[in-house]
Length: 258
Ligand code: HEC
Image (cartoon, rainbow, N blue to C red):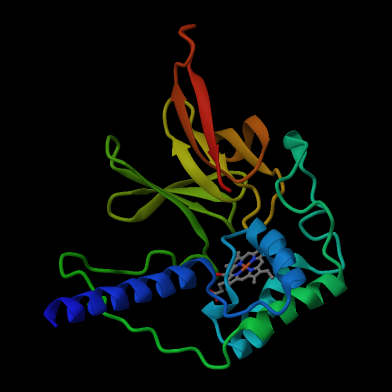
């Protein structure tokens, strides 16, 4: 009897695991719009991971997320696909602009496969505590109406802190007491800085979602325009200076996003 009930339990667990595994690979119950799914997997996944319809309820897709994504994708216009691919030649994103009919198929796919009401998440994690007793927060960015911080770099040697702001198109330098001492004009959206002999900055050029190759590695010249070292980069995030080929000169490795 005992063995039977044990094997029964094991079978139940196996069944649950099998069901869970199925859920993993196919979260939506049944896709009623395969063409819409194909389009979503191609277009939506060109900017971020493909989101399954089951993640949100129908109304949120319809009135919350999809209108915002439509704005980013601009159906019927050249949208992402029409953007210049710069030094890359070929894009990993769909080459055809999305048509209003294709957009309607994507909307259909999300709205008809999403649940009416989302099950509340079964949260077994400890709640996140707000506040760190060792630190005291104080506002620092009072000088811009809408700051977009793209870089914070702490130079422990000179005890300076560098802030890049995407809207201002500048890098601000502070001393450790958090007062600005200096600022440099940069290509908008500084993401990395090398404050060596002549300060070099990596910047993305345009902070809205885009594949435009407006990124640069440039050297700062104080108040005058920065001097580009490499242009036409696509969302560059970091530069590393190192010797790769033993020619005694530094090579630059640049990482791009996406
Ligand atoms: C042009 C790039 C781009 C494309 C294409 C795109 N998205 Fe997004 N998506 C974004 C960005 C950027 C955000 C973050 C927006 C924000 O936080 O304000 C985002 C956020 C989201 C979110 C999270 C929303 C939230 O409130 O947190 C969902 C869900 C989403 N996208 C779904 C989609 C779907 C579905 C598609 C295809 C129909 C799509 N996205 C296509 C750029 C894109």
